[in-house]
Image (tube, rainbow, N blue to C red; front, side, top):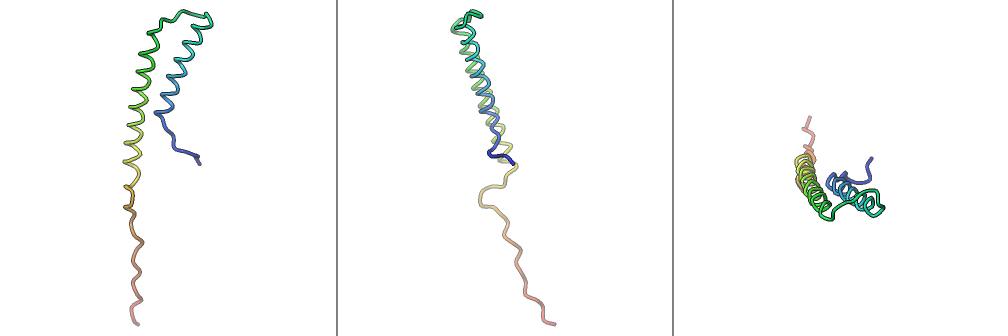
Length: 83
């Protein structure tokens, strides 16, 4: 059993922000040269994809889950018919 709901938007956002951090760390470590403007489209694109993934996941959850307060009442018990 899961402890919490899976949230793909957060996964996508975290992946892209981690990638941006790795790019800057590689630049700071001297492994490669990265212009400052390269990471901006990466972060903005990742946040856009994260928002899209979150919206799709929310739409799927709404469709699968019944609306709040619309539970079906238990069947009414009818009295026994006289014999």
